[in-house]
Image (cartoon, rainbow, N blue to C red; front, side):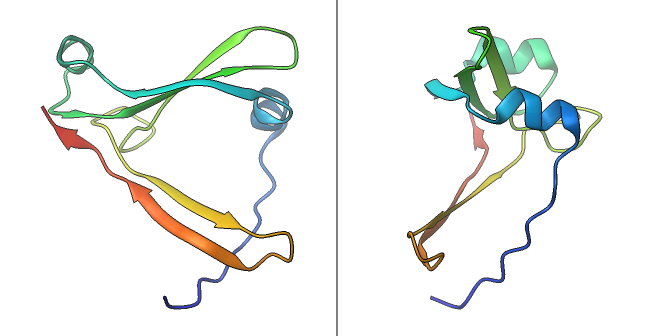
Length: 95
């Protein structure tokens, strides 16, 4: 595995407020009906969180900020010393 350089980017206050201390409660790919309703061709990953206020939050991987199609989520797991132990990507899928 090649070494991956990690850069920490401070998220805006809205993203921090939304994601910090949230718990993942469900993960799945979009159904064909959902893909069609978005006008997309590929099924994106949907992640549901329960935020610290107790509200349910839905995250959908998008190709871009205009929502033109589904996209890719990069996944990197670090051990307690900050070394990479797993790296993967969750790609969009054709349905």
